[in-house]
Amino acid sequence: MTIDSGYCAARGAVGGNFSFQFKTQPLMVSSTGPFDGQVNVSRDAPVEVTFNARIDTAALLTHVTFDPPVDSIVLTAAATQTGGTACAIRHAPFIGDTLYTITLGGAVTDIYGEPMGRAFTLRFGTEK
Image 1: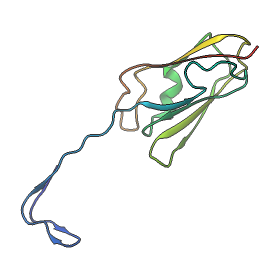
Image 2: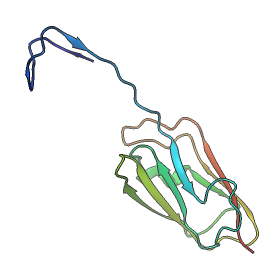
Image 3: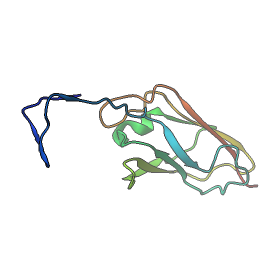
């Protein structure tokens, strides 16, 4: 990014062109609950996923798969204080004593349409 010399900063003129660069982090999952590999997860526990940026929550569930499948999936989402998105995926009760794999497809996008690019997989086991 370049700021032309004609612009003024709070403390006066910029004094020649001023250039700088920055890079944003790619969209990614920053935390989950349950965590990957967790065991004895409550059959009624929501799946909580936090992203490092604001995401397109309207399309999120089209990119989420549960194996084995679950019914009655409902998503709630809220912005975090750090600029991310915290999501809670509620569902019909999990089957007891079962290993679950949840995949968030790489097509999950932030609010600017930038995709995550790579799938994210979460595995956990439920209580008996």
